[in-house]
Length: 625
Image 1 (cartoon, rainbow, N blue to C red):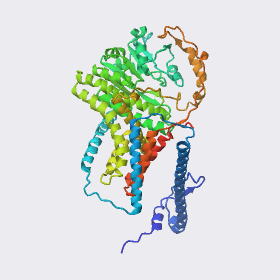
Image 2: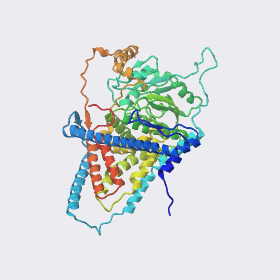
Image 3: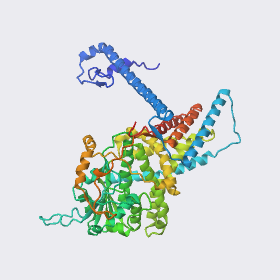
Image 4: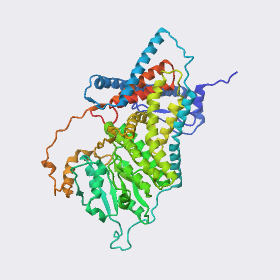
């Protein structure tokens, strides 16, 4: 006879060590339980039966509150769905307050063809399902095992990330960090303690960045020479190349470079320059970025995850074990001799920072990354700005790879360093991973829903990407609740990255696009007053500038007050056609997966399709209208 189990007896026994549970009901949406400890006496045991009914009522209240919360989640989901449908109606059907992305490409034409094929196949499947038709394909066979092996080989490429994460854990466990040979440049002379410090030139290349230029200039408090180029070829590389040709550069030994929105700390130079002392092989000291607007919206949170992994894992591990990493273009100090011996700034790609870093590495210069020296900056708050930035960051490396490959092969560095540059630094990070993410999750997976013989296992579409996402979030554990949005958004961004990679690799026209990443101009995370008073501060900072001679030969430029004020254009949201087409392709594949009851494939396709839809409608990041 099975043992008798009385739930109320169990409930009473587990409540003998304290008074009954007290439920606070001031706010039904935010309730809590509190147990008040007290000693157990015979009196408590006598009245235990009386307490049983009271505890049952409290349990009922708890269950009702749980049901209330569940209903709240359902209501929230329904409201979100209604809002999404309303936005689709306004933006996609009636085109209210939006503009369509004008760009046409072969990639978009291919996606449209796949979408047409999927739509026709779904219609055929629905008709066949209603008619009760059945088809067999006894003579059709797809070598699924070979497909699995191909995916397994691509998945093994993630071993690079695993190795880097293990290296980061080892660095933290052993508390390894770069230590300068001398801890200070200060001289023993108490009257002139800073006399032995080297001369450092500070350069702030910028173009059309009126929202943020006060941030970098205002952090130094020194005399500023404003150098203006009328013929602005070469973008940022052209600015830096022009600045290094000035006569006064010969008086300096080092150059610190900051983008317009960066706000270095007062002791930045003291913490970085000291690493150059008695270390003649050191060419670059790179500091880490810190973000003032990382919690502004979902887009900035997801960028924070990516960039934290980049600095905490990639840059730190490569700096410690290889003495090489890609220069981030800002918040770094270069030895001018290293720049000159490596050929200086070149205008041949849109990633001049990576270009000079690779050439300096081939010339034998070493790099140091300081993870504990941080420099405040901003991340893009709008999807349009972030998308342009990512296109440049993924097309430029492919341009550079084509140009640098002969130099890498013929250089005098070791075979290991050559292999690291070719396969890990370029091909894996900038070519294989975008290709893998886009083709697998955006093309192969939805099309397999219409080919019964082809089946992707759950570990390919769920477990491997999930593990990789966990590794990316590991440097910022507080971002763990964003793991699902992060995974879906990274797959969504693979379209932009894949298109940029192809453009750079085959030298297409979009590979040479350079659009300044728009920033807001926050001085700190809580600087709301600063945003309101930017115009007043701009006038104050303008008076502090010394406008030196420009390349045009003019001694001074006309004041901004005399210039014509251009009327501001009304901002509208974008409609991104590639993302929208892929959204419908994935959603159609989700419907087909639902008909065949494929479980996890349906949920992945559904959520990934909704993710593409949100991005395609410009519903992530800063909202304009």
